[in-house]
Image 1: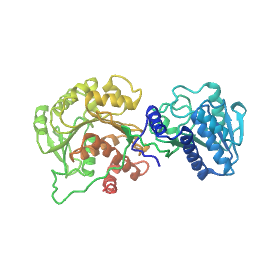
Image 2: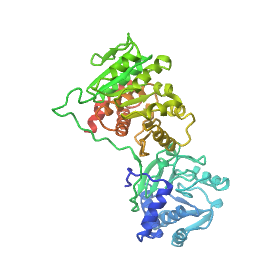
Image 3: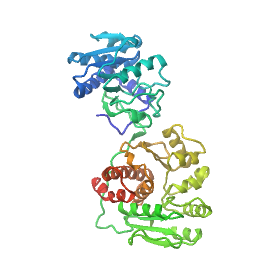
Image 4: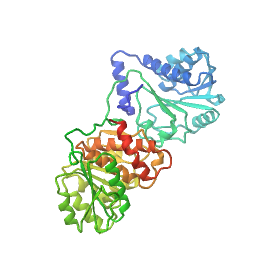
Length: 467
């Protein structure tokens, strides 16, 4: 099993392999470990399927020859298709050990199982039309498709599909997971994701979001020590109410909503304090007992929203900026938050992020890191492949996604969950990571087609799982 705490780029993977080679491990041995490990995985799941292994001219193709030979020795009906002879010494060695049938790519016919070893990590341009045409034909004719390391046509570092690739049933990562194993749109093409250990031990500043390890209240705790979350409400009351309810159900000791006259409390246990203008809000937010502030859900985008945002930014408490607060801040976001001394988190979706950067997203991970560095703010970039980045570039990708979260109100709930974690005194990055995991897990517990209120009701059980 590979360590999901470390995800390596193509360059980092090359360096990690070279480190093993420098210690005396040959390229041929690494190829043997990778190929035989992948072959065992394929055989355990589908040992009885006639198999076509598509081998490219590089080391990924060499892995394919190892896979084919191992399966052949197990009695599998296996054939290799190759567009060219191997070009690397290790791949040539692997082919020399292959005792089965090899046919030209253009002459190959589909088999029940298709194993893609055409290209792996490091692909930087689309596969040519002729090769990709045969690739697509052979993949389309298979009942089961397996990609080795990465599906051919996927760039390894950014989740980019360089070709219109088919979906795979399984992808077997070799040595380490790569960013594109978890980034869209490539991630949706991967199917079931597994990994083969070949001895890579390199660390990186990118990993998969881990399950939080939480602690319950002690005998010395009280409502303020467990965290007072302040929600700054605006024009649309419902969003702020959801945020407050989520913060309460996520473990905050005390939740207050600061709102204009006429705001109704979502529950008697959530306090609503009336504020008439931004000066009064600023005075109330100066309360040293406040552990975390949320502004943005339902804030609105008028002049009053701008005044409320400016007053909130002046507070000394840890702060989460979401939704309308990000739209109101716009391209001035970096200047507005980079001088704050307290922890700050921003939780934009792709459209809001484009407004902060004054440009559309190109590479989510790289762009998220750029904004976090420039603003000195923790960034949680929402999506089915949510990315959390802290200012020094350390990042996590959420692998516990739930597509049922693509509905109104769930972002407001995420803001409340993160705020409740931020109110415990942990770092903004850790609070965002824990909040994102709890949010996704609650969605899985809620089942398909839930309302925001149903999602909130699952939060206590989600917390219980992490104690």
